[in-house]
Length: 296
Figure 1 (cartoon, rainbow, N blue to C red):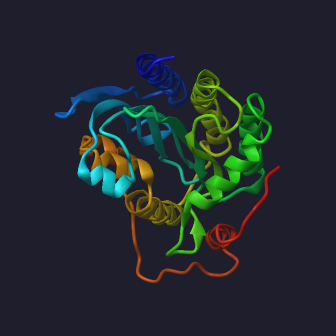
Figure 2 (cartoon, one colour):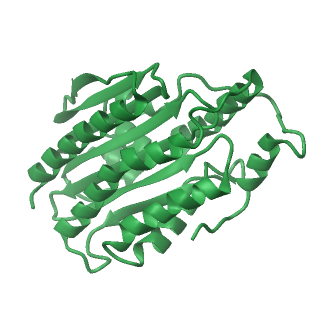
């Protein structure tokens, strides 16, 4: 399996996910914005806005290649002269506080020295945490993982808990999911099997989101609950700008800024030293995110 085939399959995955998300939203449709990278390659960024469910969302495909710059070597610890990277990245921000933010990405990276790997993950960021809904999400992820290696879920869940964490806030970004990086032959799976795992996760994405959205999309909400959603979006923004590896890679590799930052919400808020009152749903969510949880 060569890199060109992987790139083609990821592009097809992007289109499949967009078609399914249009069905799930029921109102808005995606627009496509192609872009080129001067050093080599480019991508197609697809965005959706003002839907019945999705206030702002993006499903981005990229396929970039070229010299490994000195900045990439220093910041990303890459050892090689030429690189190739392709993948699909998704973030959806709903318009209802009782529907979670969801993120997923799958990617492939190759260097001219023969080193290659797969990476990716999926995680859920509820504005109001519901443990039972989180259990449903994690059970589905475990089912996907078990088709390939029964050790995947436990390892990747722990990896997600560690990765999707805001150390300056001492809280997780949400209820986690799975995260993996630099996968090659660590789990006795060959290149094609690891690629199929990435595709399976990607093809499951719109149905995982549809299930979680159905729990809350028809709930009414107050202006105060909407403001809390904007406050939690601020936390999401902090993580993406300060810690997210995909954001860093895109910026340091000379990617397209608009596509890299499509994950940011349409509106977020920061209130100085804001602490929800004890006993409120907001405080319960905040306390929950400061503890470690098991879902299986």
